[in-house]
Image (tube, rainbow, N blue to C red; front, top):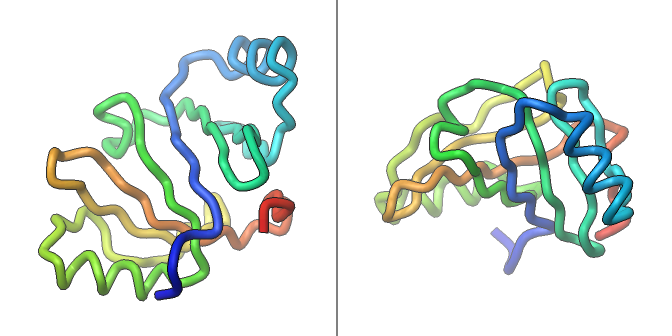
Length: 127
């Protein structure tokens, strides 16, 4: 694994993507980095993002999820496994969202997703 990550995303659950869009995209003027119908990601800086998702998946059970973006998902997963971090899902493709990802928990139980975007629409300007 190389030092650092390519970017980071903090995901939040929402029941209303349009309301979120009017505020983050309209009022704050954040550029929409990716829209995949059930989630939208807004760029806050060259390599930092806020994501909002309508999913009810268990990964969002705490209301938020930290996503770290890297091309080396497998390497990071090996490092976390070796350190004893609880694994929720080993690295695998998620074709529905054109990503390759895994899920681990931090020492206080927060969900951390390690992810690579395979979607050609992903905003690569932060690299």
